[in-house]
Length: 451
Image (cartoon, rainbow, N blue to C red):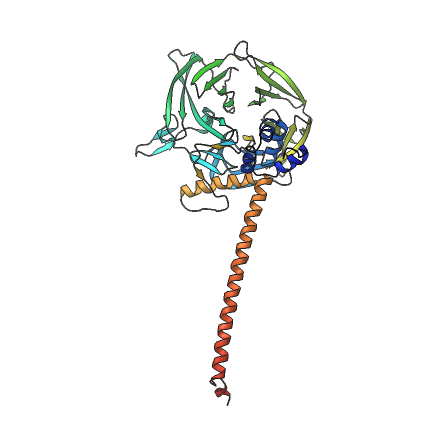
């Protein structure tokens, strides 16, 4: 294997499914190093097994869109869900969903777990009849943070954190509390609290997980950070960059926290530096914004950013035209069209650049069959909704497509075999009838009618 030219080796590796690729890492150190440490290989392989853009209303919706990072405007991928759902967060290949309750899922492995919120102090409420319901309103969903850590090469662990802000004894201050969910759906109130100058969270900015901590952006520009592992909390005292646009985004790239500020002419990318000593936003890149149609544009905003891709979306002021989702590849320095925004969508669209992970999360012990549709009670509707979300993501994955084709081919072979058995059985029955007819005829009973 070591004697193979690198292009040929990569051609072989790119054709492997994630499980086989993980097994290949155990064969030789050189192959393991190439798969694990080469950023080009990891990026290209993951892009081949289902990297794409997820889009849904921030208020929740029964329609989910998913598009690969190619020109797919004419090939809109969407799923109609049984239950109104939300995507709350994405981290290291895992999705945190709200489908009549919190759910963590890995669309690549089809593993999932619904979290029991009934024991949470901040997420549940008991009515007069003793029924427990999910209490958090949509505009406070940004209190929920999602952290995923890599335990080893093939294993992950996750935690869900619910932050609660409340008035302190001093009216000019706010106190923050943190409740942590472990994998077995138990909720534990952390002993850690932090009190700081009063400032609300920006309601359309969800927490970002970076370098072991969840980060919430506040209206005064400061950032609240909480480490779910050490349960340490701190406030990063920082102000917004000058002339911050209303079209902005708080996000995480591979090596830094980022703040995107966009105008119709220019997009500024800021990186957070010196967080422990002298935190400040440093301008690291400027991108010309020449893709918006100013004559027909009704509204627009920054959709997503991860250090490799930046997403802008715009909606049209003409009732019969869909909006456009633009993507900027920071490595190639060019724009492209990723998808579209239907005219009936609201302005609160949220986007996630989904990158699959073939690691196994130890807490995800249930598996959904995306090939089987279930109907019936509310629990089955939740499973059916989850199945449709996973199957939609499969549609953009060459690996998943080949797996689906193999599944369909297998079913075709099985059906062909069943048909052959039926034909054989029918032929046997026909032969039996014919034998009886011949015997009956030879006996003379038939001919006697014609005599």
